[in-house]
Structure formats: C-alpha cells, structure tokens
Length: 465
Image (tube, rainbow, N blue to C red; front, side, top):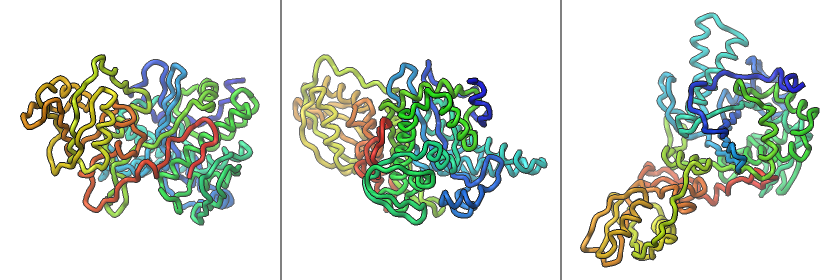
C-alpha cells in the first residue's frame, strides 16, 4: 500500500551522489520553483489553465527558477530553518559558454538551452529532449546553489508554475494574511488586507505579484514563504500526514507538478513534516550587498562570505564563543572608515557583554581595520581583536591609558559569533550589509531590514506585505 502510494512520482538523478552530505541525520532540502508554462514533456499548458494562472499566452517566463529555498532539518528534531535566495543574485556559474556569472535564477534555463542544442545535434527530439534538457538545468541549479552557499544539498524538489495552483485547489483553498490591500493587473492579485482564503488562481497571483509592492521581489519572496507556511499549516490541521487517503490525494496532485530527487523516502519525510508545521520552522531571506546593472539588467550584488555566514548561522552551524570568565574593563573608542552608519554603536553594543565600556565614536577618512591600545590595556585589546575577527593589534602611546581604539576599515563586517549585533543579524539588516565601498557610485542602497520585514514564522498563518 505504501509503495503504491508514491508510485508515479517523477524523480530525478540530477543530484550528484558523490557530492558533500550533511552530517548525521541532518538534511538540507532545496525547493525549486520553476517559472515555466510547459508541462514535463515540453507541451504548452492549455489556454484555459494559462488563463486561470494569469500567465500570458505561454511564451513568457522561460525556465527561470523564481523560487529557491534551502531548508535545513536537524536530525535531532530541533527547529528547522529555511533561507530564500533572492532570484536576481549575481553569482558565478560554471560550464555555461559566455557566462562566467549570471543571475542565480538563470542557471537552469541557460544550462537547459545549451544541453538541448548539443542533444538536438544527436537527433534527440520531443519529450526526450525536454526531459534531458531539464535534467541539465536541475544539475546546474544544484551545483550553482551549493557552490554559492557552501553547504551540502541532500534532497531537492522542483515544482512548476501550475503546482501552486493545483496545491491550493487540492487543499480547498489556502488561508493567508496581508498587511495591506493590494491590486495588480500583471499578476491578477486583488486582495483586501487581513486574513483570507485563496483559491488556486488567487494563490498563484499571491506568490507571483511583485509590481505595486513596496519592496518588489523581496516582498514576493516573503509571500512565497508565507504560502508554504500556510499550506503546511492547512495540511497539518486537516490531518493529511496521518490519513492515508488524504496523503494519497496530495501525492496524486504532486505527480502532475513535482519532481523529486531519486531515492527520497517521501513518506518518512511526510511524517517528519508534521513537526515543521507546528511552529518548528522559520524562514529568512539571504542578504544582498547592493544593486547594479550588468549588460542592461538589474542584478543583486552579493558578499559571498556574508551570505555564507548568514546560512551557517541560520542552520546552527556557527557556535558563539563562550563569554570570558574574566571581563574586560577597557574603554573602547571606535573610529569608522566603512561608511556604514551606526556601525560604531553596533560594535560597542556587541562588546559590552564582555565588560568593555563605551567611549568615543567618530568617523575616519580611511584606514585598515586594526586595534591600538594604551597603557594597561594590552590584554583587553587582544580580547577585542579576537572577538572582532582577528584584527591586528599594536601599542600606541597616543591612546590614553585603559583605552582600546578600534579602527573599522572599508569592508569590515561584524563576525556572526557576536550574536544579534553581528553578521547573524536578520539578513539584510544594516549591521549585516556589506560596506558602502563595495557599491559602485550611484548604486542604490539595499533595502534596510525594516523594509524587508522580519523572519517569517512557519508555524501558522503569517502576515506579510
């Protein structure tokens, strides 16, 4: 019975079986949302379906992965975490002619295009060409995400554009919550503020809208997170995970729209997923370092180390250092050459639990990150240097006794180990963004954390913009 339950699910061998794996029973699962108006065989979706989806005539969209969410599920039953990768992040890609870098959403379609070009020369056509082209796209997406984030990917699931529609329809609607009323002719979104239940067509508009939102793609990312949380809440409250009949209906829906990595025991995962829908999951969005134009396209600039730190922190891979047994007593004076407003105050606040006292805070024209100390402050200077990421330390007779002078040079970012004041602050917060020097003149600032919104709680019906 259990074998029959999952028979017919589409599987993929795109995940490299020799690649890095999570330790113990931990799992990292990549969710891929494919913005395609075609079925698994490459046929256009019927016009009546496209009309329901507000998805044009089927020629739009291509094969962009407009949703990329990496979910970490601890093997010990602890709280799971999911990070959304902004679709326009400009990242390195490998093995694509003429593209050393690309928007991360484009890796799938570019790899598919070049693979199909070579396969067509071998006489491969039709559904077989589509299947093999998509496998190439999946492989490239998995490779690109893994290289970018520097963490293993153990499983993946790909859902196409119609999947959101079919899932919401199969569930009899999905309840969501909006902070403000919205209306958008492009996606078909037309919703009042507050909690409401969306049908299949409305659900797709909900996750696709970006026009008319204060933060565009960032708000859309939060919509996607909220939809997943709300759908999971509906599944749990309906008892789907413990009712074989309801689970069969869900799997039957997935057969049309979902491809999963080969060898994934989805029934065991379904049992595990019950805990994820009970407030045991939180979504965040990875930070960006600014915006720029590349070949006429708007892209997100990224600080790779900052992004990786955010992922490791979200997944519990960063352990804060133990607070020293003996507190420091020096006064810290912070000079800021980064151009980041508020960074001296953040440094002072981050060091205060260790006993450091607040001193002067001022701007500096330039200089490399370093620490200088006055008489009697050598040990405290070494402690501060370690906490701030291993900064060089020198004695300086110009520094008053009992004082430590901290110079923050261009590009400095607080280490993740300093807790909520450092790089593991909510992604996109001011203290977590890259320095202004890394941005080209005229590039707009990335949105402040407040405008991106807080992390999305996966335990119920979260309200989003």
